Image (tube, rainbow, N blue to C red; front, side, top):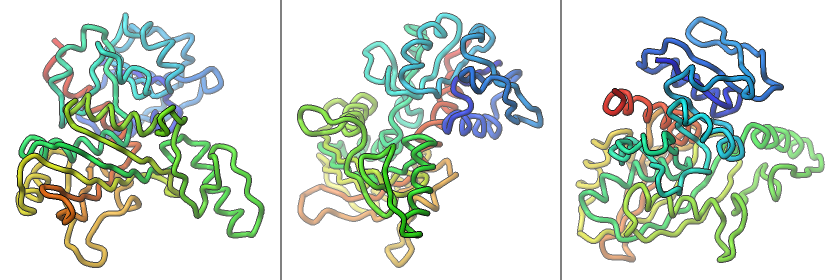
Length: 334
């Protein structure tokens, strides 16, 4: 099959190329598409160098599946055009809550893909949502989740390449005693935390918090009650989440650990000693969602605490889209 990536030169686009390089998909041709300023650049893939094509000059009929990794404004304009000629798997937030468009994490709700022909567009969830639902799915199936309280600690790579660069430049300035002025963040990010991601809504929550709450319900179960606090942290890559879960049924820690250890895409590292847990630095570059600090919530019956960490550019973006493509090809494309 032929594949294409819109936004091939960005953070997620580059990661998608890396994941495709390692995947078992049989790729005849890969078309790399970006803005005019990137047109003509060459990017290595499978011992070849592929020339980047301008979005305006690209014919979408050349590829059966096209990954969009270029943001909401590009997706809004170009994905419906592309979907007339190719299957679109979109990484942006634009289509996620559209009624007729499936929002998919393959380990959780791959059956939602059976309706892809309705629009020919499939949405990839928010990076924080993807890793969260992978951990919640096996627990919900067994014990039925009533409520989730999640606090996220999100790496700067989730904001894009320029904010990543700003973290590095601010760190250098801080260490050299120079004055810091933030361009891409509302406050200094180096050696600091910012409890604010995306725009504020009327109820005091941010759009990022709204996304993780509503996307989780759409993917997993609309009956689950949720609340979130999303925080930007001075970490390069990998999002971390402190998760409190209240179940309808009673559980044992042994049951929880067994379920999560066997769940696809998950790995439990929880030895309850110094260093017996995963940090974002260690999760970077891994395809897995790591779960640590598994313990009972002693303040609430049938409640549990977890620490969940995953590479936001992989499971939270590029990897999940390629996994969607793999399921489509294996089960739904004829």
